[in-house]
Length: 190
Image 1: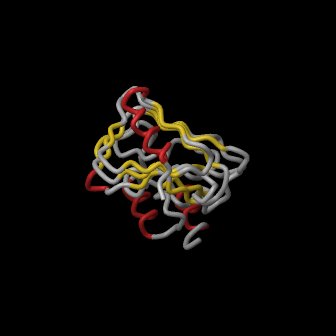
Image 2: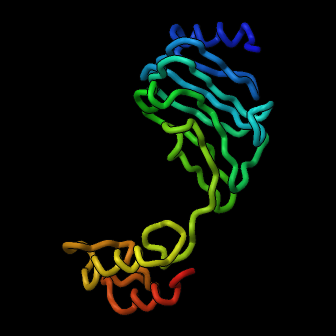
Image 3: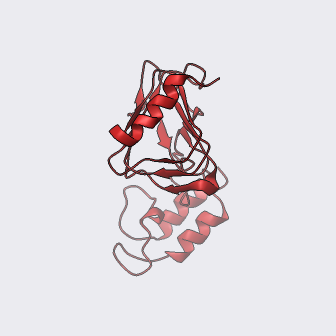
């Protein structure tokens, strides 16, 4: 059941350019919605689920994004694997992107992943791979990493074919050489 104030709040977006909801509210907009370049969408995260934990904007019609997305933490510290479905829309009816996405700093090694924001409306939390042999960034040291190193073999920093991701021996020396290959072999299949 939609709340009457949600409809009023979304109607005001066209006039004021700001969407802010109480903690855990889902704002449902049954028609088309445009967030102009001057708009702000404020999402508060106070828990791991939408039921009382974070805000979500649901748009049944066309959604045109623009302006600023501001995400804040309200007494909750996200953990690895948390997924926040903050936008609900039909991806085929989506156009535009936010000009700016402001995310709060997370604790420890945690980082935000916004790669699904314009696909499924999700923000997620992850810990990046810390394996120096993982050149391609897929969290595994395998043939793709060896291929990347082979393509950059014997190149020097700033030269043609240089790929700084392949200079993995520490301290980095600006050359992709046998030291880097030995480091890759050390981490192989990890």
